[in-house]
Image (cartoon, rainbow, N blue to C red; front, side, top):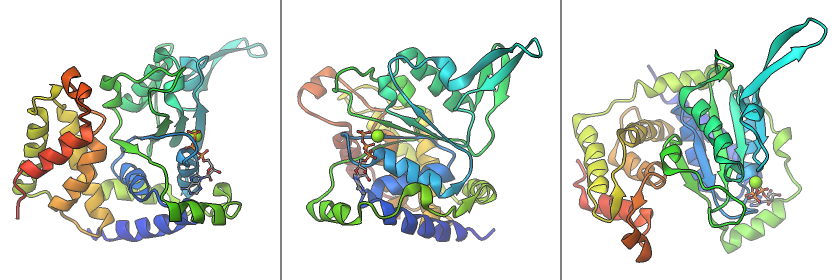
Length: 312
Ligand SMILES: Nc1ncnc2c1ncn2[C@@H]1O[C@H](COP(=O)(O)OP(=O)(O)OP(=O)(O)O)[C@@H](O)[C@H]1O
Ligand SMILES: [Mg+2]
C-alpha cells in the first residue's frame, strides 16, 4: 500500500489552514494527527488566541457532519447525548440524538460545564457510542472531538479530572503569538472566513488515512524506545502516579500518524520525540512537592527524553 498520499493531503490541509490561522504550527499538526489516528484533541490556552477559530477552520475543510457545543454551567448531559421526546401527534416517544452524534464535534470551553455533563461527553468519546434510555447508538466514523478550554485557574470553571483527560489523545498547549505573527494576524484579519473555505477532504479519504495507520511499520527497537520513554516518565519520583498503558498506545498511534504526515511508512525516533509532549503532558500527575518547586510536566518529558537511549 502506498502511504505517501497522507503527506500530500496534509500539505493541502496545512496550506488552507495557513490562510486563516497565523502560526500555531504545532497545534495544526496535532489536530491533523488526531484525525488520522482516530484520536480526540484538547486545546488549552488563554482567551483570544484562535482556539475556536482553528477548530472551526479545520472542520470546514472536511466534507463531514460538524456540530458545535458551547459548554456552559447549565448545560445538561441530555443536551449533549440527546433524549427521548414525546410526539403528541403519533403518541409515541422518539429519540432525538444530541450534537455529539456527529463526525467532527467542537466542544467549546469544556471546563465551564458541570462534572456530570463533562463526563457524559468523555464517556461518548471513549465508547464511541451513546446510550439513551438503555438504547445504544453507535456514532458513525470518523468521529473526532476537538475540545477547547481556558487554563484551569480561571474562575467559574470545573477542572477536568486527570483520569478523564486521559481520553484525549492530545492536549495541545496554545500560547500567545510572537510579534511578527501579531502583525500578520492584523493584516489578514477580515480576509478568508473559515466557513467559506472549500471542502478538500471527504469521508472516504479520512477512512483511508485511518487504515493507512495500520500499515506503518514499527520496528522492535522503536517499540522498546516507546516503552523506555513511558517507563522513565512513570518512574520519575516527582510523579504522584505513573502514566497508563493507554498513554503508551496513544503515543504509538500518534507517532505513526506523524510518520505518515512526513511521508514515511515507518516510525523514526523523531516522530516519537515530537509526539511525546502533546500525548503525555496531560497525563502526568506531579507530587505536591514537585508542584511547589515549580516543576512542570514538560520538564519531566524533556528530561526523560534526554535520559532514554535513542535507537539508531
Ligand atoms: N493566530 C491567529 N491567526 C489568525 N487569527 C487569530 C489568531 N489569533 C487570534 N486570532 C483572531 O482573534 C479572534 C479570537 O479568536 P478565537 O475566538 O478563536 O479565540 P479563542 O482562543 O477561542 O478564545 P476564547 O478562549 O476566548 O474562546 C478571532 O477573530 C481570530 O481570527
Ligand atoms: Mg473560543
